[in-house]
Image 1 (tube, one colour):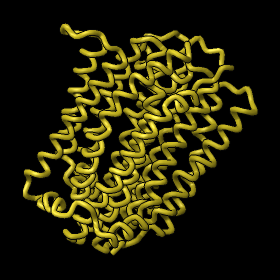
Image 2: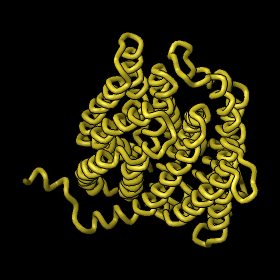
Image 3: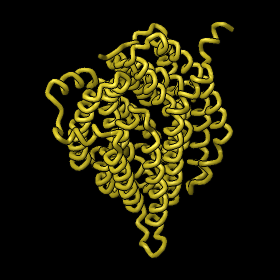
Image 4: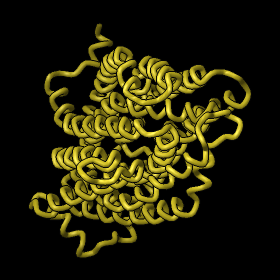
Length: 460
């Protein structure tokens, strides 16, 4: 009983956690719910259109995670600077965020414009006997991707400002901007995809246009708020000298470039896993998209709480409260276990609801339901893994985070899954289960690292 006690927090502990995490959870919940509805709308089109959008979103997912990784590194510094009340440090990290984000934006746009055909062809296999026309998949995917490129700029600007607000524990405005944008996105997609209220039916192009407009609106909300609020005077001050000092770039880049590489490689690893699954047919691509959209609706709880954990622990470490941070890390793990059990149970019970809403063949629907059942049983593993990741990351030990997260995903999860796909005739269910079970190795390593306390680190 005494052992279990250290994994349970008091009322103040949970109050603090929910204060930071709830706005993020609500924001992400609405985002994922609208994403689900958006997905359902595209799912009323042909399987080729659905697959095209699904594959295009795989590439955009890598870009989004690259931006997330680029901003996560300086955010570790900025969070601790907030804890130490170092305004100059906050300004310099914000300048660094602008610089690294612009570089990634330019690189991503060039890659998507020049190599899009080669990227789509990675998911098309001539020997998978799919009933879906691969040429149609590529055509619809490109139609969607080209329009989505216009949304990259407002997305990047919004993320820079939102990370800055969250570091200061101000999560309400990012939530408001996000909720506003996703509701507008939902309405526009309904109008533009199906041609309502006198508009022409634009299919996948309509879905992309709705998303881009919504991103522009979210961008305006966050930027106007940040510059109009006196609490964030340092935001206006950074434009007196837009780019960071040379020493700042070297210092932050040295401490965070691995985190950027980590997020990029992790996203690449997850995309490569879907590449493995695509060997089983384009119908599997459609099923996996349904599974991903549905599971993200529940998985966001783990990620949102993890983000809150990183902020709280980061500020504790910045204030040199190392003992408190160590004690709280165990409580976060205890909370993650309970959260994983509850979320997994809900997912399993609701596994048959969402797939039935798609206008696809029974084969794809049944496959989706079975894969969601596997996913539900593994939720506790995912939540624990995410929690360990954010605890380790809060102390700025980015190289350990890199090994723990992306290196594991690329070498172990993708490596073993790819070998299984090439050397066996196992069904998609067994291949997916093997891929998920490999995450247990990561949990064991993560818990050992948390217990040893090597992440307890003050960056100043």
